[in-house]
Image 1 (cartoon, rainbow, N blue to C red):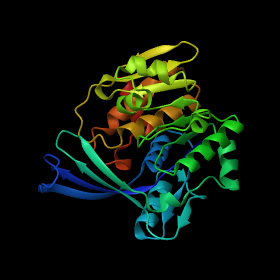
Image 2: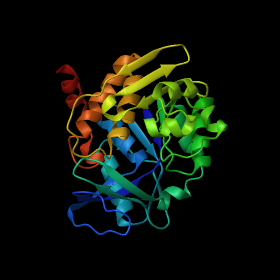
Image 3: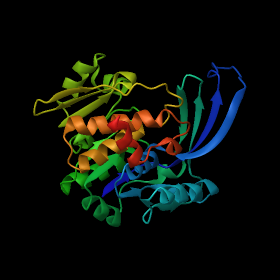
Length: 295
């Protein structure tokens, strides 16, 4: 079982030819509401990639909260411990342009009420094959969940987004850090991904730096280094590519796959997701990932 401790947001997605500049109004061509949030996205990605998944977090007592709970459950994610907080759910306002690029504003809502894992949530974490974390919940909550997993011997995979300073108490509990190249540069001060990878490995046991169309770099303190190319694809919407990669990578690692094979599995899943619009709605099923890898 994979456990995801993280955010659930309703994505309010506007599609435009190009994103507006500051003070500018542009006309969009479409608008959709799509259940998302980095935590919920990673949970759905992992479930669709073939793993049993439990999601821990909070939604509000509003229509968005009910829809997000139903969406997670419909994807096969266990939401038995998903909290219902007073007030509104988290939302993300997303603008997607015709090149597949996006800009995002997140309003935490119910996510901001999560201060750490409960006793029941700690028990679920301790029984997991991996814990997936992101930074859309308050930092003390993320750190507490990571430490609970570490104490139980459960591998911790952290996507350090949205970018912010990472406390040593959190990094000490992380098994694999999964930043994109911009986040890696921000954490290490090194613009070159190879140099950034070396610096990350001074702080965590393993790291993967995702490089968009250039693939991903992997390194471990044991000395292993890998570059796995991305699957060539014309992007329609990159909103959930990183979360799809993270969820699929967690599944592959939980299945005991070697690093190179796990990264190829994750890259195939991400490539499939960017060919479709939306976040959770774009994530591929296990059969689709296997078919992509087969040719």
